[in-house]
Length: 306
Image (cartoon, rainbow, N blue to C red; front, side, top):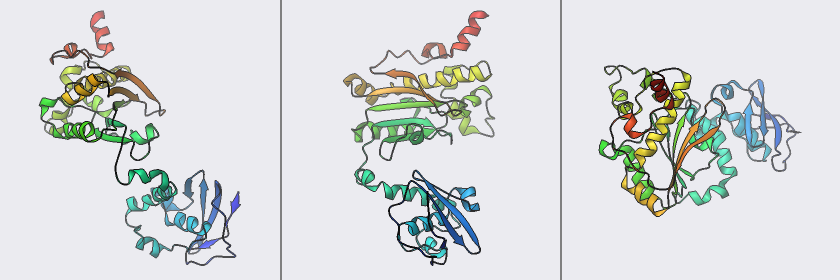
């Protein structure tokens, strides 16, 4: 491990000499007033012992350490603010670490500067724990992403322009798109809301949104096992809804598109394939859950037992 000399926030340094390229495992001491903080770099990831890093995951000390170990002029709090990292904005402050990684990989990312060529349209849930790029280790330019409550694909006749415009743009203006993923996840709040409906008076928008799928999934029970069955059934239903769009059907017929139904487990980070569609499947008439064919297995079992 290499230990740099103490760098001070005022811009001076004690016995500092220009260093070679940053090692994979490095600890740098940065003085801020009367306090010295330990900034650690390991395998491309930075951390700091200061309260700011513990609170928001970023701090100007990391900028100081990076500049100092590369032999550049050191940043002070004032110069950090001038550079676009004001202390009062936690989101801009957290951009510091990302910008470092971005600059370190700028040659790899350069092809995405002028145009995007994603290989996948990802339709997922808005849940903050389900981040598509992290789940499949994708970089900028790989995924064209649409997220909403419950990873729902409204039918073409629903009048929902949000999903339909995303789908249209992906299939008509992004020829690189060859896959569409519908990804559900364990502990889905939308499916919980189907089991315990919210008040139409308090949350009318959510009630209307979930009404698009409630009649077809026909939730009749509760419990963790049933919830998972409902989550999986919803993914299958959205794959069926996707095939109601003519643009999707045309691409499936031509063999230039594949649909995937995936399930993400927020508890262990695993991803499971539930379904894969290579060609247009027969579409039953829209009616009940039984008609659509995606009634959860537990529901069928309960009805057989009764």
